[in-house]
Amino acid sequence: MAAASGTIRVASPEQAVAAALRRSPALGAAEAGVAASRGNLTQAGLRPNPAFGVTAENIGGSGRYRSTAAAETTYQLAQRLEIGGQRGARVGVARTEEALAGRDLAATRLDIVRAARQAYTEAVAARRVLRIATDSVRLAEEVLRVARERVSAGREPLLQQRRAEVALSTAQIARSRAEREAEVARRALAVVLAASDVDLGPSDRWFDDIGPVPAGRLPSDPAANPDFARWREEIARANAILGLERRRAIPDVTVGAGLRRFGESNDTAMVLNLSVPLPVIDRNQGNIARAGADLTRTERVAELNQRALAASLTDAGQRLDTAWREADGLRRVVVPGAEQAFGFAREGYAAGRFSFLEVLDAQRTLLEARTQLNAALRDVHLRRAEADRLSGGPPIPEALNPMGGRP
View 1 (cartoon, rainbow, N blue to C red):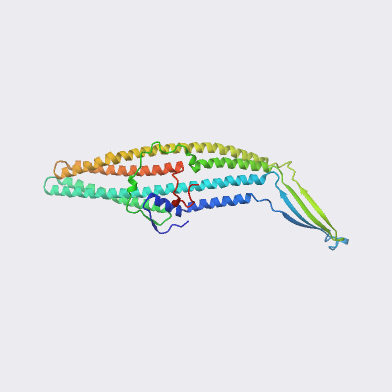
View 2: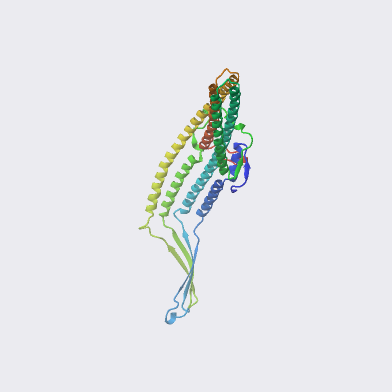
């Protein structure tokens, strides 16, 4: 994966996801974990190596054994036999570990997708806050211009001009703060995308598209969530480890065969060897007890975490539905009404039909409505990204998935 470098351009959440999947070091680490588990699986299936030994007897002594003339040399080949099924049990454990690594990779990919979508949403939302603040400054400048004209014409006291100046200063301070927040959000997105900086592109029309009402559309079963499925693999792994420890209680048998050469006569003879440990003290009982307790603990923790994931998915769906309804109401009713009210107040003030305080109140209401709508739209996109993460989807398009589709 590429290190953080250069400025990249992302003009949509999909492009942000593609860049994150392409550049994320975390995904590369998870892929390496899968490769490591496959190496463990290969190693688990290997049989023990044979052993070759040479034994020389009756040398370096006294009398007739002073030299090597009476030496007896034995060349032997020995093989340890795993008769208790340990190799198959090891392979079973390694397969569950490979499955766990695959679940971790899938979870990492979904985490990256969620992080990219949410960071891009935060960056765009912060930029829109800056635009709202800039519009607020423009409106405040326009109100101040009208106030100065009315003060100059003697239709308003100087106090109203001072109020307009204060409102403009407040709007300028808010714009400065929004500029800093937008910069922070863009840098956070750059970190997620492993880049030095990010160009968000000119358009954010996607931000206003919150889709149809989400109620009843989100799955309530988190079975597709790799974190949920991972606990099934954890239980299978604990079971496999328990089976392996039970098989390790069965002693291995070592058999050997060799050739012995007698130095004095140059005769040779076959040598056979059989070695069987006697499990009278160590029957692996401690490891079996530990593996059994680990299995029980894993089952309990799995049940707890799976219930928590299911509850989190339900909560995420409800929060998304609530955020969607709030955003929908703001964009259809509140913001258009506030815009219309401010337009009437501004025109009426210029014509002398409304007071300056009514104009300021309408301006403040419009600013608050736009800010609330922006926050609600941001919340919808954040909630949807979280709900998708907990439900295990939606599927990542082939072109955006460096692993070639959903695992």
